[in-house]
Length: 71
Image (cartoon, rainbow, N blue to C red; front, side):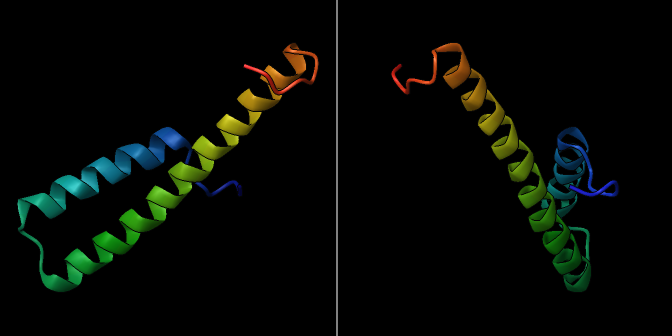
């Protein structure tokens, strides 16, 4: 991810703020659509961070168990 990509925590916190704004219902339709689109982007970024963390955990687990995929 690039240097301008928010961390997982930053993406999560901004997404929480966006959800609160949308739930408040004080935005125009255009503002709501912009918030929604930003929220979708942030959700994808957060998921990429989680997927990367899962891959690292899986790799560490595989290395610790000698490469076998047994649980």
